[in-house]
Amino acid sequence: MEFNELKELIELFSKSDVDRLKLEVEGFKLALGKKKAAVSQPGEGTILSPFSATVSPGGEEVVVEAEDHYSYVESPIVGTYYRSPNPSADPFVKVGDSVSKGQTLCIVEAMKLMNEIQAEISGVVAKILVENGEGVEFGQKLFAIKPH
Amino acid sequence: MFKKILIANRGEIALRVIWACRDLGIQTVAVYSKADELSLHRRFADEDVCIGPAPSNQSYLKIPAIISAAEITGAEAIHPGYGFLSENAHFIEVAESCNLKFIGPSAHSIRTMGNKAVARETMIAAGVPVLPGSDGPVEDFETARSVAKKIGYPIIVKASAGGGGRGMRIVNKEESLKVALATASSEAEIAFGNGDVYMEKYLTQPRHIEIQVLADHYGNVIHLGERECSIQRRHQKIIEEAPSPVLADDIRQKMGDAAVLAARATDYRGAGTVEFLYDVDGSFYFMEMNTRIQVEHGVTELVTGLDLVKWQIRIAAGQKLNIRQEDVELKGHAIECRVNAEDPRTFRPSPGLIEHFHMPGGPGVRVDTAAYAGYRVPPNYDSMIAKVMTHGADREEALARMRRALGLTVIEGISTNIPLHEDILMDEAFIKGSFSTQFLDNFLNKI
Image (cartoon, rainbow over all chains, first blue to last red; front, side, top):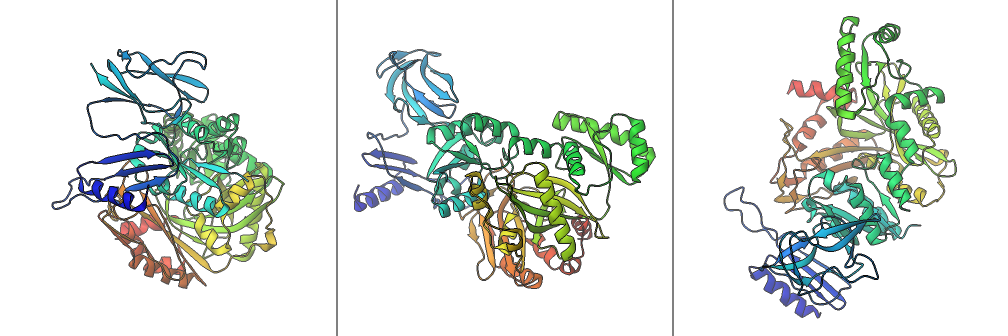
């Protein structure tokens, strides 16, 4: 991404109503966030924290998240994401699959323990947001489910 | 040398470790809870992993989350900072079983020093002076009564597995002994899961003087002089200095030697601190050993010119201590004031948004902080937000610089204890250096 493009993007983001923007393109990852101050005194408005932009090298396909109508499955633990019960098996789910509440969607392995992650609602798998074997953190979005 | 270190902590100490790693060219991994998304330690680390929601026991104390974060980032070693898991022997064992190096002492050293009664016995065997007291935990009242009589009242009953002032009872006369033993024991059982108590002579006006030690894996152990930490409120230090304003050179040497003996007796590795109680007559007694880097390590760094965190990392990586005891020199005088986000009179925590923030600078000033303008101090963790340190050619200069530094510090939007520090720095007894661990209680009652 060129410097001018980046500058334009940040300005656009600042002026818009969007709270968070995460952009990943080849060789480039950008996360922008706005921190809103809680109303504890009269006259206190939005404060753009000095800590609002992080840029780091490396990335995968373009993923743009926004507030929308998906229900996200987040990882409840830190670990490694696996899409199948074992390397030679088929993935638990693929995009487009219908899933029901309680159905196992993936495994997150932590300290040699395989934790099954289950769907909390029924719906259709709209997006898989992680790569097989990728490290995931607490709260990281794994799946976007479109509720039935 | 390590290529990548995970820092299992937050706030200013996490930043402190990042500084040392950057100096050494080591990659850093920060872990953070949801409450610390906008923290500086996350910002400045090379990589970061969110490990849980705000509560410490679901994040910074959650061993699987920390270990897993090291695994997915490829960190080879973990620096635990202070507090949290830094003195958790089980954590060390788990880390080592996962091929992760723990930057600190062994699980064995921590267990030995973590049990106060065992620590005391170990020190007696090593020839380190200890307070007259019971031989391990007291089993029955009759034994307790005769030991107390031998020691001489006042005595203090203490929990073997305890700390932080809990499971302790001061006993002034024999009539109160039975009740004190029973209540201290139940409190200990509830707080620590272990009701064992032991007894020690109680010094009424001691000074808390501690010695910093460094030990490598090759049998080299040195001490780096003392820190005076008597200005405490409810066993929490708020002002520390190096050296102590009262310690004579010969006593300093004796205490240093005793601290080295203590470290050797537990096969200690890394940076550690041996705490002593110092009595008015110049006698000193082992109190406990802190098997971690401490909050106040910076004042020792200022007077010795050494970087203790870098030494922790080097020692853990298998490097030799290339400093001999005779090379250690304490130059000048350093003071630290711990700045807490709290009301300076009521001590009620004051979390919230810091609107304006300007740290002091100029000659002889060092500030360690992870706060900034616009930072929201979370309510979930301890209230210390900055350590303001000054160094001078002598105590008078260090004090003058501290008054200057605090006077030119701006922290607005939350309350801090800076006004309390400023009052203490004007107190005649404090300025003269004549105070004990009773100082702050008396000072607070006066104002």
